[in-house]
Length: 136
Image (cartoon, rainbow, N blue to C red):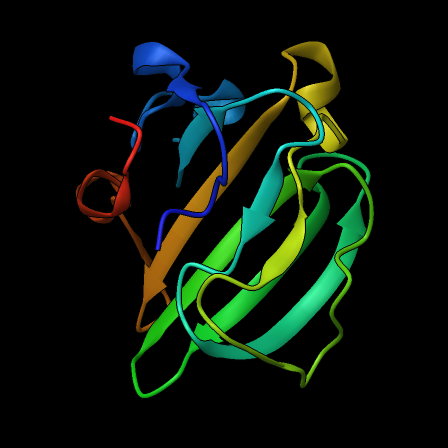
């Protein structure tokens, strides 16, 4: 299910998977721009692995392990801590937060940084997001 529940758009090539970042890094997710406070929902049914705060990069973030799959869904820059905790079961479509600009997003504005990891490695989330997006 598309993780942003409302009107949205992309940041362009700078927000795509693999885009260059400072320090020789590359972007491991896909940025979905939406108004601050736009609801975020679980893309898949699964279990919360972590809900925490990173003041440098991700701000308020959330990791969900997809049920019956080897995928981890990662959400960053939430307005505040997610309303779920480690170990909680979440169903696809359950509200898990809101679009924000915490962490390094404070300089670029409100958006969801969304990653999918398969067997511990980041994969391009754009194909899945494209299939799930009902606003495109």
